[in-house]
View 1 (tube, rainbow, N blue to C red):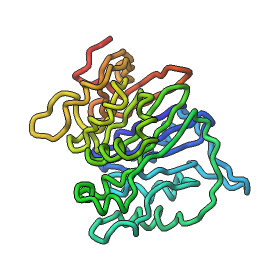
View 2: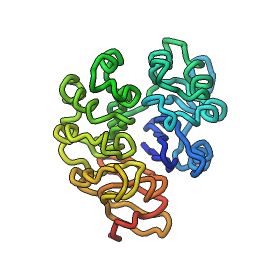
View 3: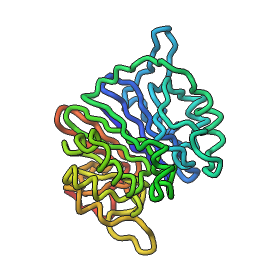
View 4: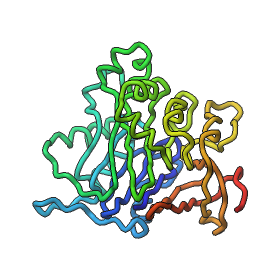
Length: 299
């Protein structure tokens, strides 16, 4: 299994090449300041070793699945290019009309993705993972809870858990602290799964303090590494980026493609490290980044 956490600025987009070589994209955000993830996809496709998913009827799709954690603009604004150039066979999301009119939703996403995927009984894709699951809070619960409904879209995030060769990864969307607490206290499947531990956490809400999941770490214990899209793992003056994550990460060794040297760090960020590439083999994984963080020492 291989995956890339794309450097898309203040946005979110990742691609997983499953053990059976089918593509799963988590969110489809982009930023005009960074290379578009569709272009990155073409550039990295050979390394990912992806193959199209072919349905039983013989139709090919470049991606097996697009998983939209929630319809915030920075998670979906690349919808047009995804649908036109690398269309997915399946879509996982909450439908736009489930949100109130006060929750603005990107028009390209509504036109090119959300409204296009209204079928049912799709084929089950044989990804080849050891386990893959999703977790989320019922939307009615979010709307009727006076704490959760302060951030309806963020707390509607659909989390993606993937385990491959014993390595456990969680994609967190923009779930807020109150959402984590609800899942930990009310979803026994979520709590039981997290008690098995995590190796890689894709941090919620880009690393903002509002999403810091202390109750998650109470379940998982320390993880190996945490990835988000903000700055370094130290405290950043004048921002609300959490500096607590490093307390809950043991650290990993990675190779910087910029100088081909190895570094060690607890927290990787796309802002500091660029695109983050991960290859998972039996019981272990390797990480390459475009560059090294200035806070990480050579190993």
